[in-house]
Length: 122
Image 1 (cartoon, rainbow, N blue to C red):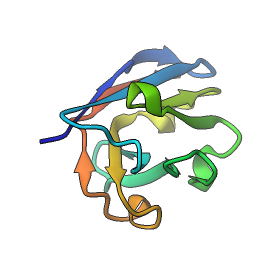
Image 2: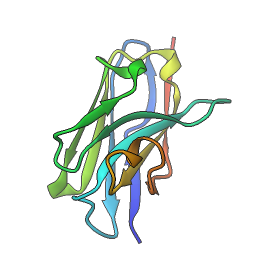
Image 3: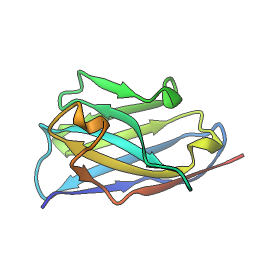
């Protein structure tokens, strides 16, 4: 059974940066698209970014374009989320995801991590 484990969340001031990491265990997900969703208090879970298995294709939500970057290291079975210029509205639980299909990764990914809290203070 594959597991995704996120790390790197925490408290940061507005304008600051954080880097989230997500490691897969159980089996290699090198051929899977990977991504990130987030869920703010009282709101529905929303897509943030995704990257294809080889890194050639990336998708970004409009709300994070120019501020967030997704990358992956297949040798380490990992995916990363670099968040810059953070805003209070970025406060949410961030979930790492994976799916064999680059389109489904943006809507209904089949593998989810447990989530890590990111809090941005004003």
